Length: 454
Ligand code: UDP
Image 1 (cartoon, rainbow, N blue to C red):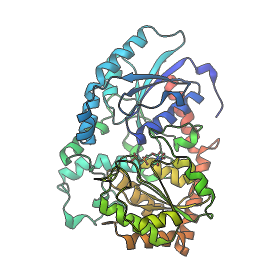
Image 2 (image 1 turned 120 degrees about the horizontal axis):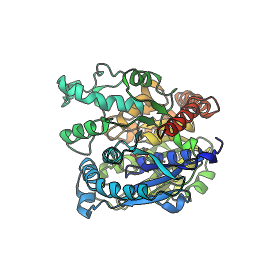
Image 3 (image 1 turned 180 degrees about the vertical axis):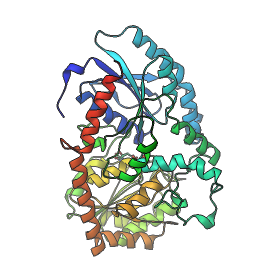
Image 4 (image 1 turned 45 degrees about the vertical axis):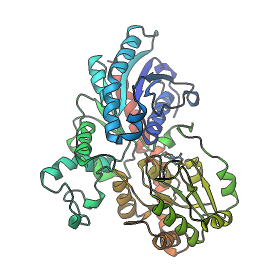
């Protein structure tokens, strides 16, 4: 990607959603567009603010979100997003109006790119007569599944009934009803209202996806068929942009020294992302499953992610010995570095879209244990379509965990899956090359943004 400094006069305003899995792709999009010659301003909530010092080339614009401690700790994520969308609209409109009144010479804001969970940005863009573009941080297939929920509700399939969970969803194969992205983080009503909000394209001029054509060709073709606006698939964004830390939590980099001491492809890396929670029973079953597998393990236990515990003080007594012999537990890992380490043979993941892309980009097969929302769609694609993951379904149980780990790290089945994951990694690499689909789509996006101000 060559620098095109002649275009530095155009400024793009980015509005990330305030969670790790949303901030990361938006900042990477910023770095990617900066390398194409655009200036970047990031307007962000105070809650979960990104760290400006990691991005010296960007201007950061904090939006006063007026969140109270109670908003953050006791409300569902969906309710929290509603409050943020209400509270941030005026601060964004006022700050942006001020910027537009006194622009630096040759530094006009040409458009707003906002995360789909921050739809207030579209209203502000309209008010100021600025074009807006949506960034979707989930997969194209998950988007189609989200957008199908109102249709499925109207047809009487939702609320879901236990007897139908294993059945395939009409028009959404290979998804089963249990794979539908209905969120755990709010009531069904809240969930459907949020989906209506985020599916609304309104007056936005285009949609960007952190995905790759070769991963989801039929889902993309389906969307393109009825889309009124251009769609740009420019992922995987973490490979497009040169790496700089986007982490909201301090990464424990000591784990790479521990990985250096392990045999190639021998380690199971376990991480459930930035939001998923487990209870103490699940913690204990996970611990014993890892210990009994006999394989070395690197386990991320996020502080506060186990109900009733601060961190790992309630791990089963006998398990401590297994940690000394075979394991390493951290609060937060430099995940991309970990996944690219030759010692890591399997990733046990909650299948967030970023984690999914990061794992397949390094050719690491997965054990898929989704918790909520689009993770269930991603898990189904990993296990049934791309066939680079094993599902871990139902209640977590140590015997099943041990078997899944051994199937992937010890048995022939694992070798075959690793080969498929390696093939996929190579395909994704091609998409980033000169004539690759993501690279072409990024060039198209650059031209598109430039055309918006004509
Ligand atoms: N991550 C990390 N260290 C960890 C766990 C996760 O850096 O110990 C990063 C991971 O690389 C990914 C993001 O956090 O980029 C999680 O995003 P994802 O979409 O996978 O899941 P979410 O957190 O949104 O559920």
